[in-house]
Image 1 (cartoon, rainbow over the protein chains, first blue to last red):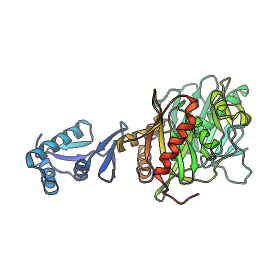
Image 2 (image 1 turned 180 degrees about the vertical axis):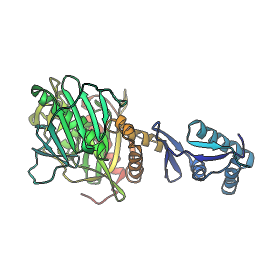
Image 3 (image 1 turned 180 degrees about the horizontal axis):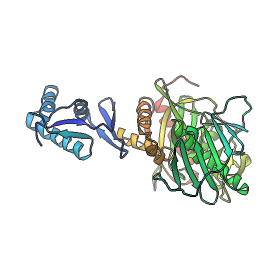
Image 4 (image 1 turned 30 degrees about the vertical axis):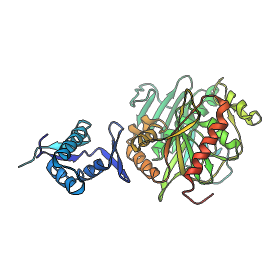
Length: 94
Length: 304
């Protein structure tokens, strides 16, 4: 996964947060997805265009987790979100 | 004739025996009229067999009965069928046509039955044959009031999700009527020669109520009745999956309204799965289980 790609949630997606969980709905398919606490934090960041590096940096300040593990988990999360068409990815202009 | 269902006043030229007539002078929300529904170049334009989208509404066909048009954004239902089929057609007016009218007017509509409790409305969701009406009737036999049968129109009011009251009679199969000891209040058949009848328990709650709990009904092959929590994603999928005709939700682009409603609902009412035995002899045990769950849940709103 390219660390400099810009990612943002798709427009045809709705989300609702309840305590430290969230539900994401893709309107076109009517499918629902559960997010755990870390997923909720990442999803909130995806409201604006952001990068893998930016997400990992933010999580390292919030959770006691080493960088390699954090990068791996966020990469897995973003890959799943992409495959489910919940986020869109663009090449960074730099 | 004027009726009230799902919080709407319905002025109908067709007798609707599943509804209770009301004696009020009001401007109706929905008119039911006889008329011509063109069927010559009918093409199903929705992902639901027999349904067709028109400019300001929907059309559908009921095989062997006739055709129905719901237009004016849900304010009018036009019925096109032979005179001898009108009695059977009334079941489609109070079911699919009313459901379509509610969708078109922007309501969120669930395929559910609801009872009134001291802490709010309790909804039983499930497909046809899941036992919604039978379970609701069991609660009525214990002294609760009916709020709605088969169709629940929901509305967000402040921080509550309210169920609109519905003046219709319960529809029950003959074995359930016997099991409930309700033979004395059995009325006419719902449709054709099927052994399903309207039942008048004369115990209907007439004002909107906030939802306190929602149970998705499922059968268990063995074991006692059990209430199982759902994850938020499962709860949301259950809610939208039990829309009154989910295909209409997608066809009318109403998913955001359903999402907003279930989001609000999650703050005040758990959405859970109830598995229970098929046997009607176990009904009392099932009601006990739900009453215990509601007791644990406690009040959320002011008492009735």
